Length: 415
Length: 93
Image (cartoon, rainbow over all chains, first blue to last red; front, side, top):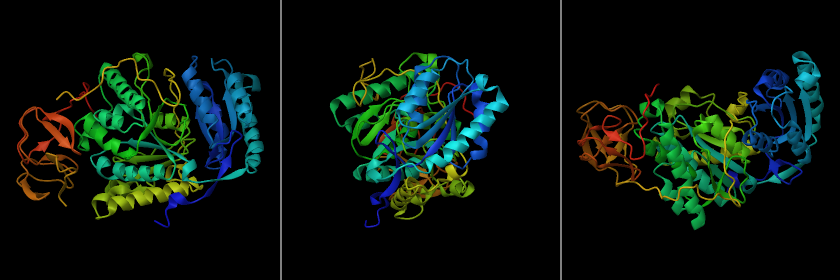
């Protein structure tokens, strides 16, 4: 196709580490929930003016939470950071500030207890933003193509058409993105039950294939201990009967190209191609339900460097992400019309016109290219900036892909 | 189009509108008479599926029959069990 939007060149933002972003956010980040109100009030007047908000809620030490804060705040879409702390929380604020300064970004810090409380901190924070925002206008631009971008793939509120229209359309797009030299990340290992053998067979190396089986087996064991899978009332009303039926539909998002590696939250892909992000903890149940909602998994993908998220929905999700803008793909025309203000693409046409699936994939490619070049997505324009960092634990694996989880028992269907 | 068959191997089809009992549907190259009310997006059996038989959709097993499911029957929670895991808690919506 001559007018393939994925062949276009656009201007990104060049970072000191050589990475390129598609946004130039100033991010206000709180280091404990006790600082949420002040951080939110600081950011409020600058909503939709280039300022986003993220934070880590808990007061207890968390290497995982710290790592996600650091990877999100050094994301290529982020140009400057204002850290807002209460003062007494167990967050290694000095370490984070050092890492952010080392990354070459403009960084400021406000500690509420030292600044004199709520009002003084809000005033001081807003003064910092007024100072930093104009400076971001001089950020060096650099050309980018589809080969430079990383896209996260997510589904939320799946219905029976998600696996027939939206996810297969995203799958066609994903193949095109990877063929253009780009990178895609899927997560939701707890929604791949039944697909593990197929995905393992697509792995670039036997080691990655083994790691796929181990990762999905770990997710199954974890969810069996929890007593439930990632499968709920909305899925059932929508016509899905089992977790493996939901999984088969979700799996269609990742197209047909080889799988290049497995990531853990916060780890950047070692190359281009397709990656699986493991979001189920390497621990007993002490960290609770993994992937407690879509923004949780989407935030983990953002921390792996995704510039944008392509998010399919059947029942109608409206969420965004603070660092990586979200593009919504509707699985059916009725919901698309009902939530028209939130949806970027209608993949419902896939069952309405003979070449509808291809047309939906073309539209996804066009909207992704437009968003990468700076065009606002619907959720972005609506001011959505969901971000959720939990506590958790992941064993670091070697190289760009993980070692298999402890159990080497190969999961298979018990026919 | 009344219903979609995602893979020729499938023993179920997905209905693209709500179907009433006794309605005749054109599914693939044959007619199937619905035995139950089948909501939009839900599955209808294309063939008789025996108890413990695999439910095939996308050409993949997506569950196992809890009871004999006749051709034209609604295929859902009441007659399908996951091979992997069923949620033990109540579902709400």
